[in-house]
Image (cartoon, rainbow, N blue to C red):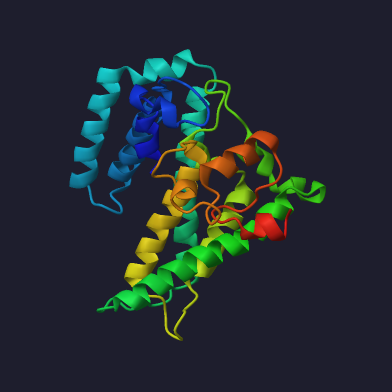
Length: 266
């Protein structure tokens, strides 16, 4: 999702859909290209989790793009871009390392991988999205209280000097504790069974895709006909509310929906 919206930023034809007006910005695309080189080089060196043939092929494609586009020179030319890219890489690797450590001390709960009815699949995915948004919204609200400064949530609200606007990649720009809470909530939600049985593997997979997509969409800053706040106004806050949250630093604490912001946090 971050790659998709970062590439979209480079397209001048989408200018009219952007909440923060700009004609075209290729810097996010250069960031994700170099970020991809670092990630796939690491996977190739370690040999996990895809072996070596797949990472080698993908790394070669990324290297070709970086060399042709001159991405390294672009990163060095703009203040803060090198560190921003490196930090994103370290955070991603830290996420994978954290999951590995968690699994080392706790065996993942078994989940069914058999046939699943469409109704059950929809219910499990929908419940997970609503539960994740509900639980994390309270934590997010607390992060903006004065006593919660130790959570380093201010890092998530930093606007990079080279961009001067919120980027799709800022979705994963978190302090350590802030990041751990977000991942922890997702783990808890993924282990909640709706029908008295473990959550289905396919539902867990789709949950991660949808949650990640909604998070990135709210940071990417697009006000298009495809945006969640346009498709379901009053239900989803989307980028329309979340960009305001990052701009003002207060109100609109829900990640996805509107009901807590409208009736509880207001």
